[in-house]
Image 1 (cartoon, rainbow, N blue to C red):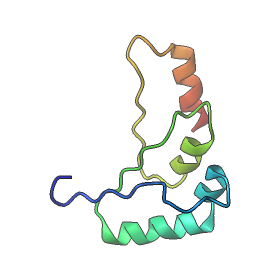
Image 2: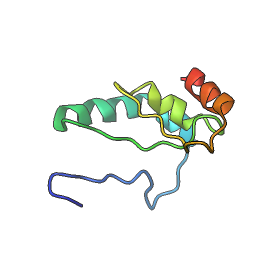
Image 3: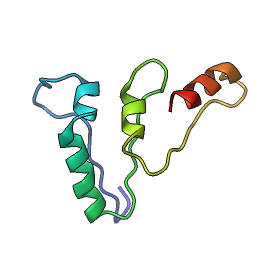
Image 4: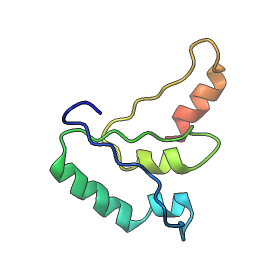
Length: 87
């Protein structure tokens, strides 16, 4: 990675004992992000698509800003609107 960039993978070698949405919505996640905000100027969290799973919507609750990415002229407008409305 470029200097000054730290990558923290979301998975580890140990099995997860809770579901991803449960982990993301936990007090532990809120505490982790609060600690990371004290250490870093910018935190970028890559999340899955908004509509098929809850993870992206849960992560959005922790975010100060959100970048919504879609495929130009490939993502139907009604799907994009539903995804944005879910936030």
